[in-house]
Each structure stands twice: as C-alpha cells, then as structure tokens.
Image 1 (cartoon, helix red, strand yellow):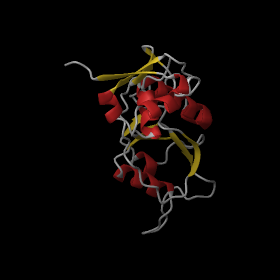
Image 2 (cartoon, helix red, strand yellow; image 1 turned 120 degrees about the vertical axis):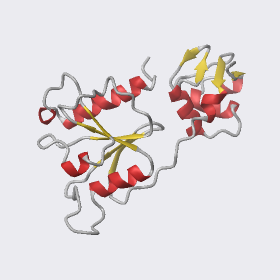
Image 3 (cartoon, helix red, strand yellow; image 1 turned 90 degrees about the vertical axis):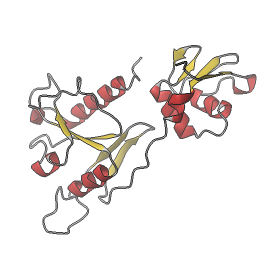
Image 4 (cartoon, one colour; image 1 turned 60 degrees about the horizontal axis):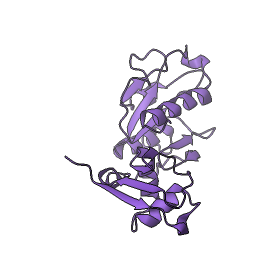
Length: 205
C-alpha cells in the first residue's frame, strides 16, 4: 500500500525558521506538540533527510510529512500523579522526575497517599508501562523492545529497587557492562537508559 506523503516547499517567509515552527505553519491546524512528536518519530523530513526539530530550514527546502505517522503522533494524556514528584527535564518525548528527599517510598499504614508507590500506581492506571532496572535481570535495556509510553524506575545506589516498587513494574531490565547497580551512579544509569530510548526510537543520527 502506498504511503500517503504530503510535500511542502519552504517559502521565503519561513527562511531561517526552525523545522518545527515551519512545519506547524505549513501543516495548518496541527498543534506544535504533535508536530514535534512527529519529527521525533521521523515522520517529517527535510530534502529527504531526517532532521531534528531545531534544524533551520531555508527557502526552497522540501519538507515531506508521512500523514499516517503524523496522525499517530497524538500522545495519551497522562494524569498528574498524586505524589509530588519533581520534574527535572521535559520534552515532547521524555519526562524525567525525581523523588524529593524525605518523601516516603511506600505507605506505612493503610490508606496513606503521596508516596512513590502511589505515583507508580497512578502511572500504571494511565497505561504507562513501568520498567525497572536491576543488575541481574536477564532482559537488557539494549535488546528489549520498549513500547511507549513508559516510565523507567531507578533504585537507589545503595539498595536498588525496593520490593514494593519492583512488584509494580511490568518488566525488569539490566544495563550490560555496568556491573552492580549499587556501584553505578544513578545519574549515569539514567543517562544510559535515556540515550538508549532515544536511539531505539530512531532519534540517533
């Protein structure tokens, strides 16, 4: 079946504009967030080449858009977890949050709310797949298909994942070559995981 491709030529009025801005103007009626997700998916190309959303376009450039992929770029709305997680980084495809110091990891009594375990339950109810990391898991982050949307759960450097968090994960994966998870800095582990998620989504050059 032939792929439905829309093609636009960049006018002089958009010379020097970012790709995401130009695509929003050319695809009238499509939100910028949706266009950004489509660019991340590789559905938007400039002169036949995949380009980042911040790429600068020039007069006469050809912007092609895979219509089916553009329409599938609608991201599900996620509820805000009750637990007060701190947002460290956010883009059209990645959300990194941190558990504030002092926030309980799990309820200590029946009905207690506002813990990290409660936040994981909220994400699971929103059909977000929870992926935990562990040094001895048979599956690896590099070989396991990770369907979006997902939330990656990293344990502490000393204790790793707590049992109550592990049981809420849909799967557990390891980072090969990293050695023991408690000897791997959590920020380094997070960087490896995010880099692999970007690569597997096709955002690597």
